[in-house]
Length: 224
Length: 255
Ligand SMILES: Nc1ncnc2c1ncn2[C@@H]1O[C@H](COP(=O)(O)OP(=O)(O)OP(=O)(O)O)[C@@H](O)[C@H]1O
Ligand SMILES: [Mg+2]
Image (cartoon, rainbow over all chains, first blue to last red):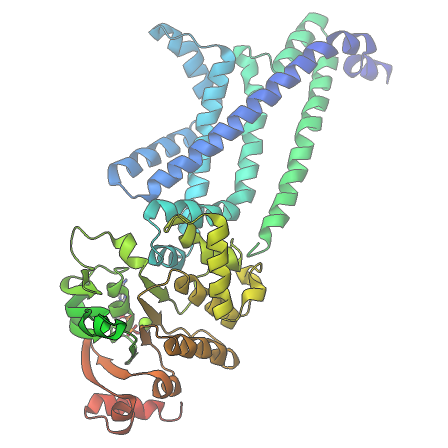
């Protein structure tokens, strides 16, 4: 028991590294918020572009979405982080993590929102167009609000999954929760910082998971 | 000129000439000629698949006609340079399935086009929206969402949505076919009231009693053509064409 406590809850180690892990929390939160906002906005924008059914444009969007959904994000992160400098492009590890996870989330969000757009009945388009609204106006005011409501559950689940992937930043040295914790762990030769990281993740993400449950029930009711 | 004199020289509200439309190899409209005069209610009858909906939907170009010419108050509806959104604003359409926007309240359903197409500020749009809802007897339901309205109420909100734009003509595609029988009356009463107020209307429906009471002219369509037309009395009492007779015989139990 003592060994267990000493390994995972060593008071001295916890006290010493708590501040740096707290810094990591802010990095994780900031990255997550930026990734979720830009990823979902970007994905929804791509889905809207696809609604215009301009063949070459739609094809490009589909290729992009399929590529970024097929490739493991870690592969992309390593490829960009270690590849771009050879082309003379130097990006910080946080920037690379942000870019890749945003692109991955946007790819998933595009597919999810597109499914929502196609699920809105044709009669909605016709009713709106028959009152004189244009294609874009109909998309924005009539179709998209309904499409987004339909796909809120898968969209939140995907967003949560992506924010958890910020932990991948550790491999390229992003000072997020896990990055700080692994650094602390190697200096202290003790697992307590990792335990602290786990606790931080639970405190951050459990409310999000509960929130997504609430969203699902809230938007399950039709016509609200 | 007096108003009556102006109306006498004004072009008919809706003119359709030689309208043709095919889906694949099937020619659904085989040359439709139709004129709807100002304040006239033209009632369209015909068997399923005869092209009634397609004809209506060509009038506001929800379907693109293959050939033919359509004018609204003398303004071309068909043709490459036409601003179809501006024209649609002047033609209200009511659908069998209501097609209310489920994410918007009854009032917002009615005001959306007023704000986005006519560009009215919210307070003005809402005042007009409430007037339109009042005309269909649903001012009290302004804040309700479609899911909380009966089918009949939903269809009346849909009528208000079209009416609010002050259209020159209203197109109805089987407005009561999706309704429980006990809810049909309210919708027909609203339509009859619109007719009394002088609205020009083109109505596809199977409500024969409504046709007798409110229609100025009844048109019978079959296989993409207008087979016969006349006053309700002529069509219902002494139909000339055999296909009209067969069709009406099947409906004799109703209306
Ligand atoms: N978008 C479409 N694509 C292919 N065929 C269509 C389309 N719309 C209508 N049709 C066909 O055109 C024909 C006429 O259809 P339409 O809906 O105009 O008939 P209708 O007289 O309104 O019939 P109903 O009384 O059943 O509503 C039918 O054979 C139908 O299958
Ligand atoms: Mg029809």
